[in-house]
Length: 482
Picture 1 (cartoon, helix red, strand yellow):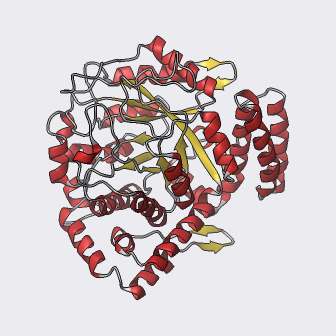
Picture 2 (cartoon, helix red, strand yellow):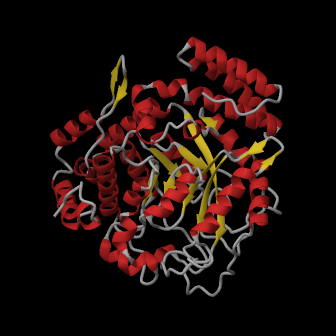
Picture 3 (tube, helix red, strand yellow):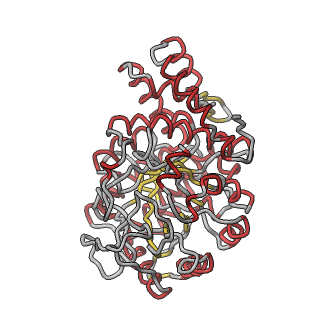
């Protein structure tokens, strides 16, 4: 039976409820009166105390997903863009993945790291190698990392992950520093989540891959990840362990996308109902070609147009969450979905273990890649591209370090005060990048953007303080934040 407050995955991601939802959506996909009422409900409410959105239930959002009336789809896209601007302005947060180890005991059929793959060399970074990778990432200009590792209790125990986090935070090279480490590792225990929290991580990210239980069990035939309920209930254990920023995601293409969409929103609703705060981020990866993996083997592949619609409707349904898109997607696809709701992108990414140190900005190893990287531009090129489209590339990590996480971040976002924090922080971290790492062309565009964007800081006092900090950054001082 469907129960969003249950702590059992079979109840809060209930198959019967999803199937009923999909039937309801199909039956009402041309119900203009209902569709208009759903869109009206989702519109931002602008008040003197901030901007508020009700979001949508999984069933309401599924009706919009099923609707393919062109003028209504356009309304959805326009609404997604409005909501994105209301809460995230024109800022885009930048990060990079750091692969620590590809040793894995699971046999996930869509991942080249699966235990039976004898073609891929296995590698695990030593702490000295982690330090070299961090220096290489700092020299690119990165401040925020997402660490990745296969599941292997012998080669990649929690102690190894914790040692890596400690090493990452300890490296200060020239003006570089990694100020926030997000963690994407296998489902674990409350005790281990407490250890990650104590280590100072930002967001704990775990992709569900698929919410369809029968498909999940087939896609994960062996290994600890085979346990669907343990995996699906991981976010509850993470929050019980004190991690209040968690990131959801499905791997679109493994199962039919309408089913996954409903399950993803049900998971978000569950976290909100039980813990008082929904997911901090939602990632939207698609199955891509990789060593020993052919995405055409899966039946749930989706077109770029459907992918864009999914991104828009996630933004409408879960308005306050950050949305992440990686270099799995091409420049053209990323350009389209940034407008529709994406608020975080990776740049200059390598998906190999040890993929940064010892390589130029334009070369990349392929022997231990988890998936093909579609957007292979350098970080400088990504930063310049964003600015040329009118977005502020942000390397900000202030909210984590100021304790503005979980419901505290959400209340700041809902009140509209985020513009007085995130906007100046974005400008100051962009200034750091321009001074320390940018090419002349990128620096010129960035300086012009900063000058123009200062006028968009609402409070006079905040604007003046920001100006003063920007001048000090030009003089060589680093790490100001609101």
